[in-house]
Length: 140
Picture 1: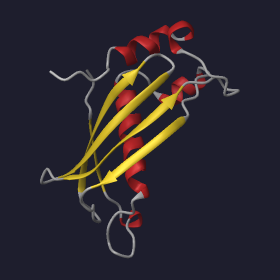
Picture 2: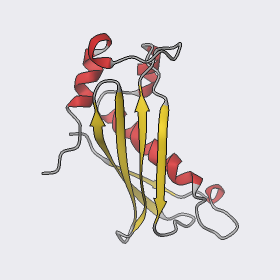
Picture 3: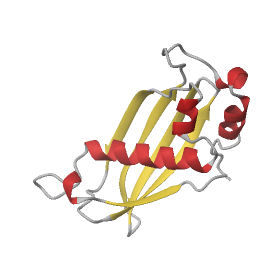
């Protein structure tokens, strides 16, 4: 299983007038964590796109628990919860350095070809299918 913790610092430009990270940036943090996770398991999104695989986001949700402030170190845990070759769903937990949960959420994605026609990876790209299938999160 690939490393599923992505670490970053909150940038000043991501904050609002109240000095906290704007809520829209949590979804961006989730995306950064997902891309890092996928790269770590051998499913680099830029390489997948060169192969003709497009991965649209079909759903995104975030729940905010505690504010993230400028320069806070944020630890985003990413888990591939569901994957069937045509659709995948990731769940995220963003924590502050003290362990407090800043936000939780999920994103859902499908696979299409370059003309946005839906496809499944199992038949056309079995190597990517296996890498993702092997990394579905399982509670131990």
